[in-house]
Length: 142
Length: 115
Image (cartoon, rainbow over all chains, first blue to last red; front, side, top):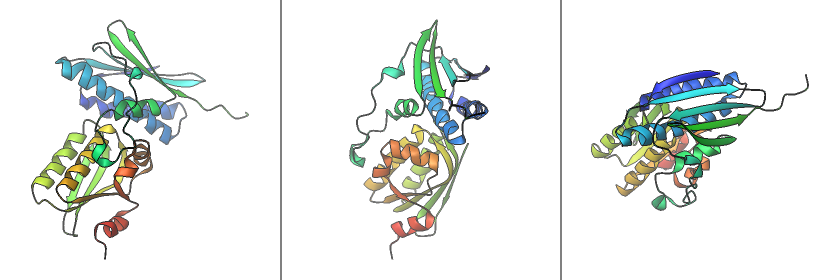
């Protein structure tokens, strides 16, 4: 298992992206899938920084873990903000609306959920823990 | 990292983006677009995404905001050379229908400056 701890600021997003992409590539996923996972984790880490820390006037850390077994890659993202489960949020309802009627929010969670096979939430002690799951393709005949 | 390079003088304002748009870099883009809009007030704009392999929803937010602002100011914003990962995000977010998108810079020029 690989881990990375970053300051809970937007400066964390660059190293976070590199960590997540490398984890996906090392697990055998292609660059497209690695990019999708990067987007998913970036969106939720941005939420952690802004909602768990900045809006609360608090400082904190972002904790990343990546673990792979024969079936899947799991990336965990933790913050120590107030309990918040983004996986229960409804998708934006205005995705097919014309320009004038489009809102400018709500896309992050939608994109995060769409870009992985599963997005799971649990509250563990004082931490919000999100898990991004990518299923590995079945191995061909040896 | 995001590099933003505006170039005027072709009858429209060409703005090339290089790098990644995240919540960390989106404010830079927003600042440059705001300065251009407040300054010379160009009517025709091209955002060239050829060297932009990644944007998060933070970039979408800026794209949507400035598409609206430029339209309100009586101008027009066209995007070109959208890379596959960004095109996918545009597609699933419904942006393909609401943004003006050209395959490359030459096609964008035709859209902005029809003969």
